[in-house]
Image (cartoon, rainbow, N blue to C red; front, side):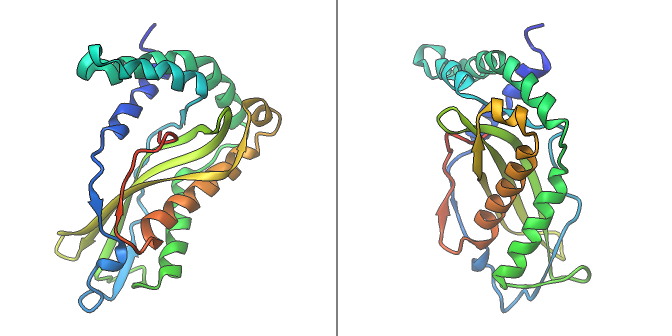
Length: 223
């Protein structure tokens, strides 16, 4: 069936890519005279499954850039790209299943580390002035160095005060330093947890530790 689970996963791409590149304030901009303590919500939202991207799908997806296709172009390109990636997804899924990762735990641990290292606010488990909610928008592997795959995570952080009002929010993406060909991942499935952890560390640093005013950009590796 054309709209198989592989194609449906591919439709995540235009959803992420169409996020406007709005100017974003750093966490350091939050008033530290008013807010002293912060808690990380352990209930991190995440998709049920990872996403697979490769160069073949990237090229097929470029069809969606045809101006004659109008606003449906990205959806058409995503569907065609995901269809071409289906064989690679099956191979990656078989390898990754041998070394499964708990993406929520990885992101939570790295976000906690980033909060401690930033020292903007005291990290506490109860009675905090603010609560940081994390949502993993998408995660998986994508082409980092031409045909080589790397781990990629896109995430959104929302800081909420005790009154339930949003104080600050930011979304960004992170990629792993470790990259490998799909064949290497099949031979060594342990590369997948390594990539996922490095991507989690990278996105945590971008979301929490980047202290300058930033503008979110859509990367070629964004899922």
